[in-house]
Image: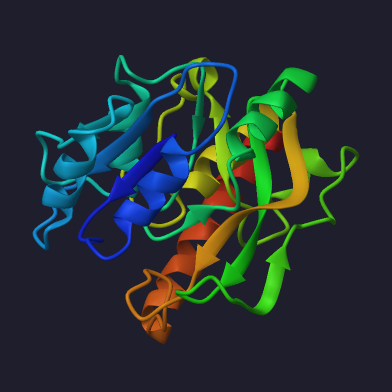
Length: 236
């Protein structure tokens, strides 16, 4: 499991605990890429790592990394296994079976990526509108192109690491997962889990909370550019 983080002292312990609490018949690590936090996050992680051998606390040598760059630090590390499962630093898994469910889905199909479903909640995990986000319009028949039709994907997102390493993430802090999913879905089938696996918190410190219109427009332009590049690649 991979958790990129920067300045989330208030929430990162919750995320880590939900990761190390996973119950599985296989070994796993929780790789936290600490992007030079300055609010006490690093100290929280050091304390957790002292008592949990599966927690891998990485502080990159570079200081110019976005979220995508932090993902690259994790997936190219020796501690990263066959699959990498996303967890944001202010969110948590719904229960201790999430990791096993995702790996079982990988094993059911020849998937490069598995995408789950999530429920939007407040800081105290109370569901808030719109609630469950499951993208049930995504079917085996339309999955090859469905990511082109929607602005975002489900969560948690999980990757077959040997395949992912042939692409890597763009070093940006928005849409990095979308860019990778477009490339993967062009060439490989993507698995889906429609049950809610993930509590996606919305609170005053959340990255997506109350973004200015100018920022939202920049993000939309970036995704439009990604779609345009991907459509041209599929046409070729």
